[in-house]
Image (tube, rainbow, N blue to C red):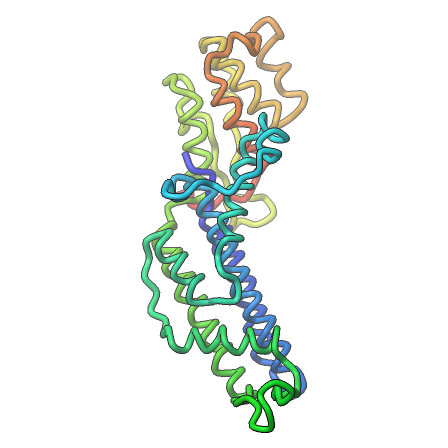
Length: 304
């Protein structure tokens, strides 16, 4: 099971694309340098966030060839919270990438998730060159105090150059969105719910199709929302094992603090020590930590 929703990744990417697009439409001689530098920052942030999301969902993509850069304190402080340890490993991996180098970023993401992008390396290098110059070397000085009267060659950055290179960044992000959507479109919120349910409940009495209802939202008939088939659950709850009752009670408690009283008594629920699959408990807690209302009327994509 992958805790990953492609739509969310695409929405993050698109939000930054729209910011760059908005700045592109407002470029003038007073703001083009600042807007270009900020556009690069948004571009870089988009790539890094994609890498974080992909590595969090597919941690096996982290290389075994090098030791993870993780402090012992990160382990000791989070020994019972493996997601924080994973986050620390991923964050260290992201920080190890050369920032300010768009080509390196693009090469990293292509290698990591096995995709191909059709960017021009020379032009992308030019994007990085101007960004780094504006961010770290943006003064009127020609370094004559070191190089003499000849100074250094300064090929100026212009409004037209900013327009050209910001357009390049937008084109790369647009292509990246298309490629990511094609590769990961099957990872929907519906798939996440279905995979979680089927991973927890193996009994035919609690089939996903019988227990989960996808309906139209009362607020927006174009939107699907998810809910529980309580009538079926009440019938099935009488015949399932104590372990399955325990896991079902966790899901129901997340739906409503009062609803478990209609299904179980305390004597129906086994002790934590007797529950053999501790990994399932951790999985449920992890998913609900991210999506607290997953079974309670949340908008759901990917349902037929």
